[in-house]
Structure formats: C-alpha cells, structure tokens
Length: 520
Image (cartoon, rainbow, N blue to C red; front, side, top):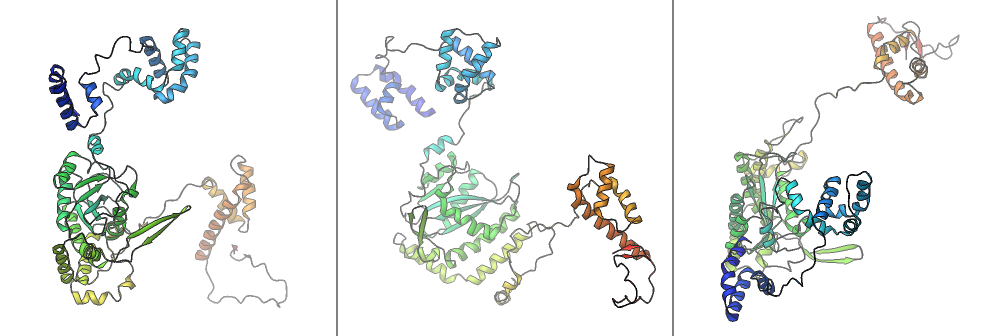
C-alpha cells in the first residue's frame, strides 16, 4: 500500500496537467502496476472532483452535539461496540435523562434513537483512538502477506502432479508450551504421499527457509508448490518471497480449517507422533538425535511402508462413503506416475536396491532409545535395552520383540504416583477420642448408636445422612483396637477347641470374647 501511495503521489501532478491521451496512458500504466479498478484510479487522481458540487453533497445529519451525547452514552455503557450499543440506547438514554446525567432536546433524541451502528463507529472513531492511548487498532504484520497468498481448500487440488506439498509444524513441547522447544517441519506430497520431516530448533523465518531447502533436496522429484497454514512462521514476507523466488506456487489453507490440509495432518500423527511421541525436546543435542531418527525413518516409511490414498468420496444422505486405492508405498506411486522424469525414477530405483529395511529399522530404534532418555520416566523402572549393536542379534530379536510390548522409548510413560496421598480432614476428627472411649468400654457398640450420641452432642453438625460415613470410620477404628489388643495380649501355647453344636449348654455368643473383651 505504501508503494501504491508513492506511485500515486509521483503521477498525480503529471496526470492533472496532461491531455486526454496522456491521461489514458497514465491510467493504463497505473492500473496495470497497482491492480486497481480503472474507475477507482480516476477517483484517486481527482477526476471526479469537478463533478462534485455543493448541491450534490448530502447534508450533515449528526453534528457535534450528537457526538458529545453519543460519547456520554458510550462511556456509560462501559465502551460497548456499536452493534451492542445501538439496542442499548433506547434503554440507557431515558435512564440518564431521568437521573439528570444527560440532557438532550427532542430533535437530538430522535437522532440518537435512529442512529445506525456504522454511524456510531464513524462518530466515535477519534474518541476511541484517544481512549486507547492514541493507538489505533492495526492489522497484524503478516496480514498483508496473508492476503497476497491465495487460499486453496481440500477440494481445489484436482489430482495435481508430484511436487505440490502441504507443509505444517509439529511441536515437541510436552505438557507446556512455554519457552523454546524443537519443532518438526512436515512436508507431504499430495499425489504420492511422500513425506519428509525436518526438525527445526526455533520458529524463525530463516530456519524455516533452511528446512524447506533441505527437504527440497530430499524429495525424488522437483518441488512445484507449497501449501501452508496461516501460521506466522510461514505467512511472512521472508518465507513467501523466498518460495516464490524458487518458483514455487504458494497457497494457504483457510483459518481454523484443518481439513484443508488433511494430507499433512494425517502424517503428523501417523509418522511424527508415532515415532517421537509427545515428550518435550529442546537443545542442539536433541535436534541431532531427531535428525538421525528422521534420516532412517524417511527411507523406511517412503520405501517400505504402504499407505492408503483416497480414490473417491461420495455422500449418501448424512453418510460419506470413501473408497481408497490399494495400499502401496509412496515410492511405488512415484515410479508409476507419468509426470515424474525417467532420470528421477532411475535414482529412486537405485535407492530402493541399496536400502536395507532391517538396518533402517535398527537405526530408528537406536535413535528412539537415545531420544527416550530425554523423556520423562518418573515412577517406572528402567526400560530394557534392545540389542541394537549387532545386526544379527537385532534381527533375531524381532521374532520375540512382541513379548516386551511397546518398545518405542520416545513414547511418554504414564505417570505413577510414588508419594502417599495426604489424608483429608474429617468431620469426626474432633470426636475421635470420645468415640474410641465408647468403643473401648463397649466393643460391640453399633455405629447407629454412636451417631445418636453425636446428634445429641452436636445436632447442627450430624444427621442421619452421616450414617454411612460413621459406619466406615467406626469399622476401621474397631479393627485397629482389635489388632492392638491381639498384639498386646498373651496367647496360650495350646488353643482351646471350639465348642461343637452338640455340646451341653447354650453356645456362647461368638461375636464377643469375654476373656479379652474383643469384638469380632
């Protein structure tokens, strides 16, 4: 916009002093450079000033008195927006007049009741600027760059050739997003599903450019376009200008519509989170280990891991029926695609011949084990180390690796509490001494009787609703007293034989032992 204004200032004087043919040439050049409509350019150069007259201007309806009264209403409403202030005026204006806070005549009252939200914004623009401390609300720094990048939705791809990538960031921040942490730049090709992951130490424009340049050299075909989200790490002048200078077609997804980047969003979970997990990684050492992990994972995933690709999608009422192509590795899609050159296909075939899936898998597990040492493992024993040093040992371990369960050391372990849970205060804490004395004197005392005694002592605190709670606590205290009596008592070396039902006399109540006065 500033460049357009400078161009207008440079041409406006020459335009007004030129003849008709010269003005036409200036307008052609100006509209071609700025992209303005021709009629708008004529108005900017002052071509419509002569047609404007005093007779054609609309009279001023709202003067300074309306602005002063509207400012008072706006302040009394606690700075409401115009759309909310408009329906409040018929309620607030009579109340302020009734209490003497505002005086308006009948004509001004009718104007205030008929005012529109747009007029309220226009009259209060300077007032709001002063209220904000002289700062006008400005658009973000990347908004102009964002507007210059066209939007591409999930339905606008139309089966593109290989080389059009969806780009997204995956944060390795763990449970907290504060501070600086490593992020993975994920680039997924729409046509083949080929995915490259490049770790970035910081969210900085130059590092984003370096990561894209690194990924560009890893793809087995030339990059033709990049599709970003609305992240400020992508939507800035440095990144967008560099991508366009490389000949990339730059597009962006709609805000808050992750389905526009369904391809890369799916890879974020299926590749990055599956390999790395959700732990926090920061520092150059973790960046080096992540780079080593992705170096093995890119060949193992793109050459030997089949993936699905959507063929068609049909809506049947409220249900969506999806049909997929047969699952094949991304490298197979590259080899059969007609838009990939023979030279690139030959290089890819050579890569497939030299790549060993077992060595790649062993390298992935080794890098995951090193990264897992940086993930929180509180409350767990040390994980078993897989035999990665020797290839034969690692190959042999694959047959029994399933017995050890999940072996990805990068996945965050569940937290197990090792400290005891602190006891919460109870309503019976102040009455524990009395209850213990009652139980010592009468071991078979039921909890209902104890509750009745407590209700007699404190009728405002206890009621029949506390029956279950008192039963639980009394049972625990009775068991504690019983254990103490059993431990402190002297037991005979020969236990007496329990009387049978045929013995003479009435069987003693087995719920109470009179010798030790123990309640069972």
